Length: 146
View 1 (cartoon, rainbow, N blue to C red):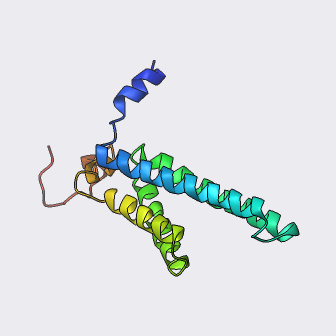
View 2 (view 1 turned 180 degrees about the vertical axis):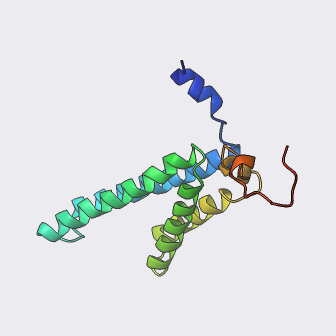
C-alpha cells in the first residue's frame, strides 16, 4: 500500500534554481494581487459593474498564474512553458507603463529564465524516461528477434 509519505519521498526535490524561480513568481503574484486590490479599493479603476467584472477577471488571471507556479514545484514542463508565455504576454501588455510594471516584468523574466537554466532542466524531464519503451518501438523486420 502506498502512503502519502511514500509519494513525497519518491518525488525529487526541486533544485535551488527552481525554488528561487517559484519564490520570484510568488512575489510577482503577491505584488500583482495587492496592486489589484489597492487600485480597486482606491476607486481609481473602473466603477460599477465594470469595476466588479474587472476585479473578478483579475483574480481569475492571478489564480491562472498561481496554478502553474505550484505545478512547477512538481516538475511540470507544461507549467514551465505556461509561465514563460505569461511572462512574455505581461511584458508585451505593460512595457510602456514604467515603475512597478517594469519591475514586475523584470521579476517575471528572471523567474522564467531560471526555469530553463541547465541546472533546472533535468527536474522537468519525464519521470518515466524520454525514450519510448522497447515494446512500443516499431519492429524492424530484418532484425533478429530475441
